[in-house]
Amino acid sequence: MHTILLLTLSNVIMTFAWYGHLKFKALPLWQAILASWLLAFFEYSLMVPANRWGHGRFSAYQLKILQEVITLVVFVIFAHFYLREALHWRYVLSFGLVALAVWVAFRP
Picture: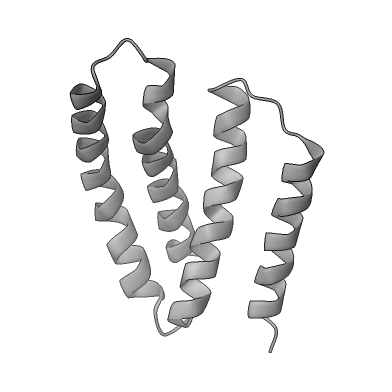
């Protein structure tokens, strides 16, 4: 559970690092890059322990797949509430296919 919590928190931070600046297009690009790098430091401070502590309970492949599905869930929430973008049915279908991939990866 610690691994999933840390992966989720790191993904929230990284989503803001990668996409948060889109609401501030008047901000010079170098400042957006600097802010993203500063946020990325904190993201790495959560992601590295999540992977280190999770490896053994999960394989490296499973950790990566978990990280990707968490990223998608966090991004859907972020895009809807922060960027105010609509969720199209194609995206829902795409995310469903990723969820299917997770199910396949975690089957015994």
